[in-house]
Length: 99
Image (tube, rainbow, N blue to C red; front, side, top):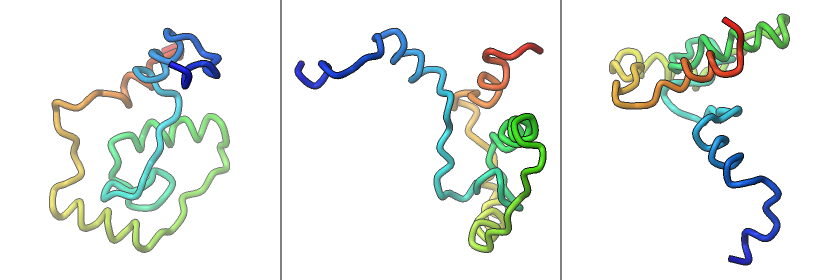
C-alpha cells in the first residue's frame, strides 16, 4: 500500500495509459526499428507517417545488423503479426486524430 503514496496519476489515467499507450518502445527484434532500412515491423507505416508530420527532414539510418535480422525474418516469414494480437497501429493511428 505504501508504494502507491507517490503516484500522482489517477487509476483511470493509469488504466488509459496501459490500454492506449502514447509511446511504443521498439526493442531489438527481427522486425527492426522503423527508422532503419529494411524494417518489417507491423507499426512501421504508423511511425513513419508520424515522423513525417513532426519532422519531415528525418532520414532512415543504415543498421547492418538490423538489416540482416530483417532480411532473415522476411525469409523465415516472421514479419507478420499473429491475427490474435492487438491492432495497436490502427488504434493509435485513429486515436485522437481527425480522419
